[in-house]
Image 1 (cartoon, rainbow, N blue to C red):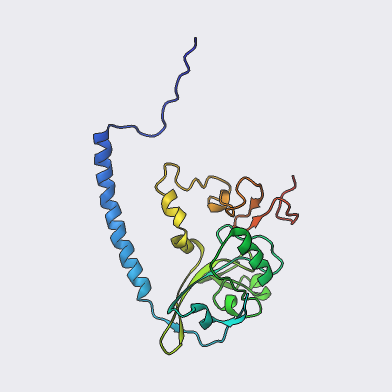
Image 2 (image 1 turned 180 degrees about the horizontal axis):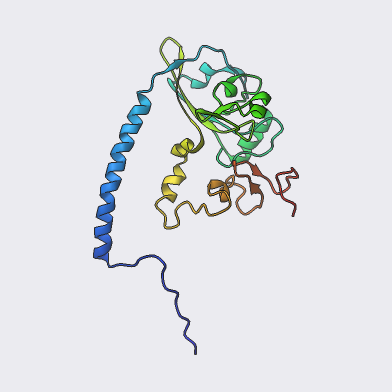
Length: 239
């Protein structure tokens, strides 16, 4: 009988005592990172605010609402700018009201969704771009002017409402700044394979899918836009 040879491990293998020494050394770096993270969080909270004086109107399931209504009796508001323009049936893997409601129900999400279509909100907060900005490479996104590649991108914005009802913009993040709000990344970062972003984009677009589409096929562009298996657009490769 031929005895199958086990492959040699490709990662260093040490004794428990050696591992403990290495782990304690790493702990010192982790503690320093935690202190730096606390300082960074405080710096974010210390940013000056900008009063929001424009009246933004959104479409909600119950009808028209304004930005102040979205606080729903609270003083703080976190908004996820979702990549889903009119006519789109899918969504960004990272991220018209009837179309939004269809996605919300399919994904089982319970938090409120509204549409900013028809208002300047997404333009003013630099996640949507007008045609002249796209063609001229003058779109302002992630705090610089460039060609965003899409007329609609993702982002996160934070607002505060005081006792007088005034609304203030306190913080926004785009691009990799959004990783702060992807809790799964903190778990993946401690796994042996890490984020396992080994595909063509070296990002979550290599593997992430809407939670109800794993194993169902479909493709994701490098910008995170998901295409269902039945999609027939130019971005979807023929099968």
